[in-house]
Length: 329
Image (cartoon, rainbow, N blue to C red; front, side, top):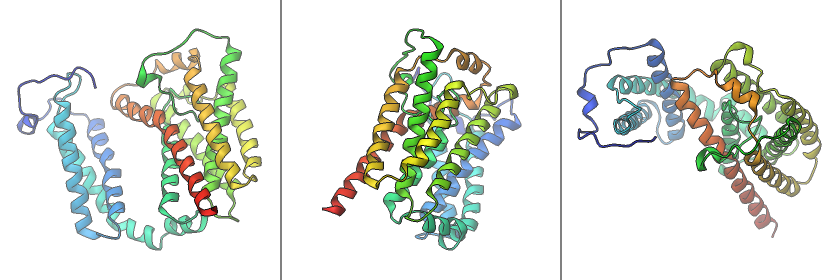
């Protein structure tokens, strides 16, 4: 996103340009698959106000506009190339995703397993849905291979380099263990505040941790070599994982107000610590093996979401606490 320049041409000049000389199946698949979730989620957003073919047309049309705008913006970046074939693949992916959504979303959202699980396990209301979205985004942040286990809120890449001076390995292990523990407990307590009374909240938290670890493993398996698939499982991560699970299973028995407060404090403390943590030389060396390409830009998205997630979660916890206070007064 650096080096913006005006090339003197229309930003839509790429539309009638010749097709790229070199086309790979990987590029086509990524551009197509990348917009399928967009089309699917657009149809889900329109439900139940618009369904069927109308929802597919709106979702596909908005995806086409988005792709056209993004490709046009890329034409002003020296490191990017605007390609008309990418727009076609994006549009095709959105149509496929929207068509799939038109078939599945009505069933899932009205009487399907997703809607039943949502109603049975979690409290009602749009504000609770926002919390569930935050949990989903937290799982998304685990795709960032450069982040510590469960860590979020690292602003150093956004504000400027800040590697800090070298520290002894024991210092880094302690920082990483605390960060993993605090984030795991904070996220687990957040889940507990969204869950209906009487539901197996401890089972839900353990399942969430299992999914997060699976996402972490999948990210390293895709982005790095097979032998580095567990490179993230450092001694600090192991201590933090074990201690975090033990503490969160105990802490969910606390009153809801106390859980909200403790989750906010832990997430805030973990955010401070992750910004003070020195770089992990082992992880830095491992990431040098990273395969570049489309994943480079995808990693930029995961790092941005990871940097902002902790602050969004803190604001949400404050909102829940304020709602709790208003309902009790």
